[in-house]
Length: 462
Image 1 (cartoon, rainbow, N blue to C red):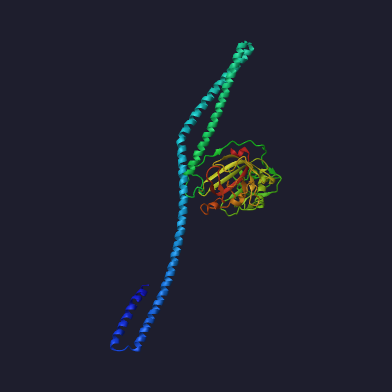
Image 2 (image 1 turned 60 degrees about the vertical axis):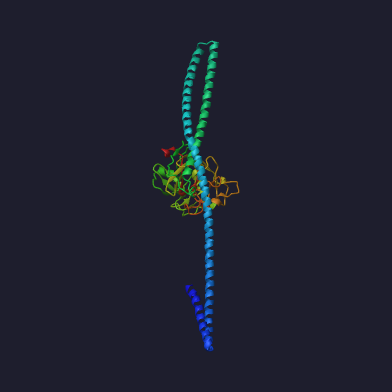
């Protein structure tokens, strides 16, 4: 470019000096024909140079114009992305501010709630003492009544005793009503306390795009232990025609090594299972997921018969699970591990329906150290993309969330979903993954899962 400008500057000067020279010689002598042709050659050379320079400038302008258009397009895309990011950030800030205000208000009332709770406890103790005193008085009155019956008391004394007994009974009823009111207030206080804890946990974990992909809370949840309910079936699972009916029977026989064994439940053909031997019992594993090497988005037939490798990831099969669980009352244990290697578990008593009911599951939680995420006391049908009986709505939960599971409504816990790592894909894809979704609060992405069953004999809890 600089060379072209220098050429444009020097060329006119050369031509001008040439013309002046020609004109100066014109006065003295007529120009020679050769000098005229030389001047025309110079003009032609200059014209060619200018033409080439014009083409070069034209190409440069077109190229510069294209580069500027690309820059403008990239700037527009950047502006659009920055605008969307700003909107999302503002929404998160608004939600965080609302949560802070709500938590501050609840924390301000927390001390008053505690004081009320202490007062209620004091009142309950006073009422219990009054009740004990009244019961003692009633007992004394009953003894007096028995004595008076033997000595045939007068009519007036009988009336007084009757009125006194009625008064005592009224006081007892009044105390019972007060106790009922106190218990209701206790339940409300517990509910409010749980809401405060949930809001505090949600507030502490609020950050950009991490509410739906973080691990279990670092605060260890105290294990919840509920007394094991009584069951109709009390017969222990033993052996059938010399073959163990489940892993517990193998443990009682003396097996103490975890591995693959053959069992034959009552009324069923023999098949292989993986038995996990623990220090005091053995569990029959029905599902195991470790690294996502096995695709759990299978057909109804596959889920009914089972798929995978018992040495790695597998699903035992609904038909086999039914043949085992139909022998006696069983416990379902779910072990979970998140992406920070935090481990949790929960146990349920359960019943499993027949194939005609689509293997309907009925759960009742008995222990665990993680908030429950499976509906209790509900009939949950096993649902798949090609066999969706979970809900009566037009939404197909397996189609939206991948894999087969006991669904009651879309968006609930799914431990047979697509194996997805945190922050690997978009929000919609993460909801297709393995996650644990309590009734209240955020859901947790799971790294590994294990489902096991064990008979409800109380010896395993000692």
